[in-house]
Amino acid sequence: MNESLIGNAPSAPVRPAPILTRENRLETLNRLALREERLPFSVRVVRGEGDLRKAVAIRHAAYARHVPDLAERLREPEDLDREDGVAVLLAESKLDGTPLGSARIQTNRFRALSVEQSVALPAHMADLALAEVTRLGIVGGSVGRLVKVVLIKAAFQYCEREGLDWAIAAGRAPIDKHYEQLLFQDLYPDVGFLPLKHAGNLPHRVMAFEIATGPARWSAAQHPLLDFFCHTRHPDIDLGPRRPTMQPIRVREDEPRGPAWADMLGAVGRRLTGLTVGGQRAPA
Image (cartoon, rainbow, N blue to C red; front, top):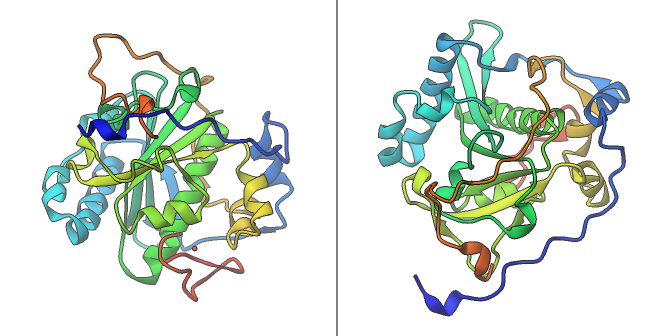
């Protein structure tokens, strides 16, 4: 490891005031939604082996287009897919049930996040309820762009509903720009891209999003997807029953961890296309 990088961990960001109280904020946003929009597909948490196999099939196909070496490891469900504290989202066509997209949300309720195999998170996150969003895969074309933005909304809603404090995502170039445009922030901006074990050791930017302040920050930035995320109700997103109150874990001393990045220095994606989603343009 390059010793010249050793320095201080980034300080906790300044938190703008949330626009709603933490309790029941997602329910409040849905109740105050300006419009309701139906989709040609549904997004839900997988509920059985058949659903999981659909999610894995679309995951493998998506990764095979961009990172074929890693895709070979993703032909079958991963152990993490079936663990407690993990939700796999599946987008499927209403017409024929064809899988259109998938994403996985791992919380730190029962074990450390996968990203912590490679990096140690900043100290200010030590006692917080966290989620890591991984294995995002969609079909190609304009339908895939719409599916992606709906999966992202579903992931934000899941984090909100489960009382999670921060969502963490790691993106390789140019996917990292997608998260940047969503107002994710670098956890280690002076370190840059880091190899991640659970992502085939490919270099990724590790980024995070504070859930509680998300609507306020999108509003302040006049984000083009603000209405879609916060003011449009999508009944076709089904997150299932709420889990018990989320409690963060403390990593055991004998549990494998990544290098001590916490002691080191340290618009969605390509430009929005003309695709219109509920009055907003969806990302490429």
